[in-house]
Length: 188
Image 1 (cartoon, rainbow, N blue to C red):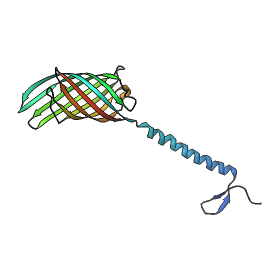
Image 2: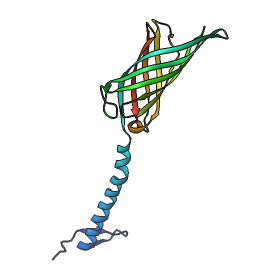
Image 3: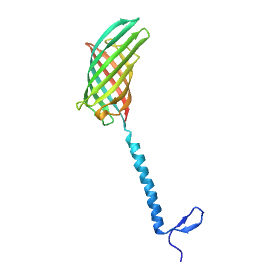
Image 4: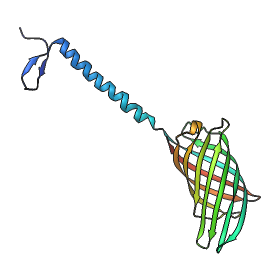
């Protein structure tokens, strides 16, 4: 009567019969290898979060302007609020509002504008998100504005470890008001 156990090929290509205990060991070993792959690979793949959001920053500007070396240099602050208008999900929640504060440095010459503004938004829980906005188009005069680019350079609390980039448009409104609309992609 033939042996009902399945054949197993050893390293010499000779067929031998595998005992149920040896077959069970091979199956468990294979299962252990697959399970260990899930323990290592899956958390790594899930660990990186990504998303997108759109905000509205509404500021009051407080600038000082000086004439300098054939151009103008402007420095000052933007203070106001930031509201999430659209979001792919947490940690950016549609409708959430934060305070927003920026320090602005602008150099205007015949060649154009060179603007840099580090900004911090802080939500009701005290968690902050850090941006650095840059712009080389448009101006900073009432009725003006322009398109720019911002980098998300980190944060605290729910925003810890976040980085990303944003494109934005800014409008300089009457009476010292400024609005900015960043559209951002982020990762952690």
